[in-house]
Length: 196
Image (tube, rainbow, N blue to C red; front, side, top):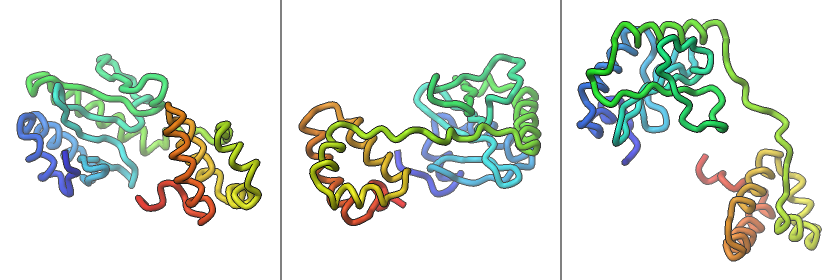
């Protein structure tokens, strides 16, 4: 699915879920949050921060609470989509428009906005150690210029290169990736700079 440039565009791309999406959108907008599009989907902000996102998938539509971990979840409706990976975000999934309880949704949105105003947020984990895979370390050990350029990169860029090699499953893929990143490192360019 292509990325939407507007909320209306997003809704039209998900015609199957249009009644449920329109209802959830109305509840989010009526809360006083600002409506925008981020990552190609509707996002609602309060005090300049992401509070709620709206999404449609094959089997459900949902609300994403960016700092949902702080919600009381008295109705036990929230799920963590990526257990062990997602720290703060929680989802509320609906398989049909009939499942949407306007008053309950409003209460959850109101609580999420209050939490945002109070500054409740899960901070990204800092200080994650840099783990250099064997293949990258061997290349750095053999080439002093490559090693010096690598060390001059920011820790974030070093991590991107290391993870790019580490995530490859096959030896051939690791070798191809090593050849690709050597030129980027020597140029002082990050792995994902062309996307920024």
